[in-house]
Image (tube, rainbow, N blue to C red; front, side, top):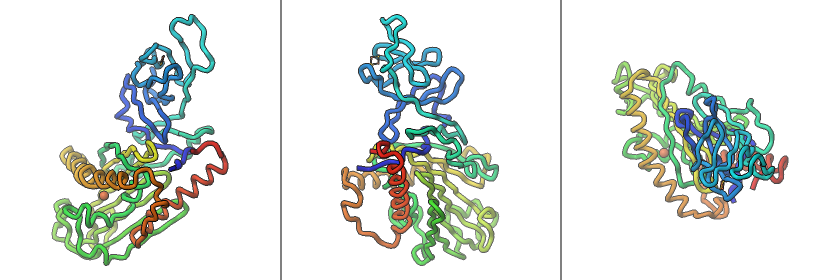
Length: 348
Ligand code: FES
Ligand SMILES: [Fe+2]
């Protein structure tokens, strides 16, 4: 069975997707969670399974900032405490409660702490380099994938599949001849290739000041636990810094739903056409073409071939391109084992 890291912050939603009066039921690391905004507009998260007859609380409603179950009307406040049982004037059963989860909104993301212990705000991933950086414009989106977060991580850290799965749009001469640099610093793992001194690919040339300039074409992916990816693709006039070229610098956040399904949040970040709604549309369209039409069907087909079998038990044959993905898997195994040693009952 897949284990999750629990004492960590996961992206639960984009802030803009959690609107006033809206109740979002969302399973995160196998926990049923209700996301909503309280009367002051602050994001909140409590357990989504009513302890009375297990109705999903997202089928209820918000009344003066507290949640009313849609089945028999029991109410819960933001701490998960029952504040009203219809027909039981003033009595509140102490076992009528749901868990409450710490939530922090930062960089337009609703982060949730799924750990047992106290939430540690100092460990909220800092993604301001992408989402609060005047050099960049970005558009956001999310999707649900019927594949494990590990399969998604394999995919995002490995640009080589672009030569095949995305061959129609991303194929590059010289890709496999370019040195593959895999680095690890602590728990940060990166994978990079640079094809030097080539004609600018059609996807980038129109945005260069000199579209005929020779360029270095780079593709870089960086992972931080538990599922924070910074992808950088672009071209730079040969020998110049990356900021002098055209960069598509995505932020991709993986939040496990169950062992075999994942919530995937993405921001398509760019350093050109900063105030251009058409460029926003093109970025979203690009993400749609590449991920929704190409990666996602493949990942879901892979998960379906694996069923609920554990990855290692199927004895996958490993090749050179797997190096960064295997480092991610072994880092996650280590972090989960460390957490289980500290809290033997916290992870299932
Ligand atoms: S199931 Fe929620 S009040 Fe009965
Ligand atoms: Fe892909």
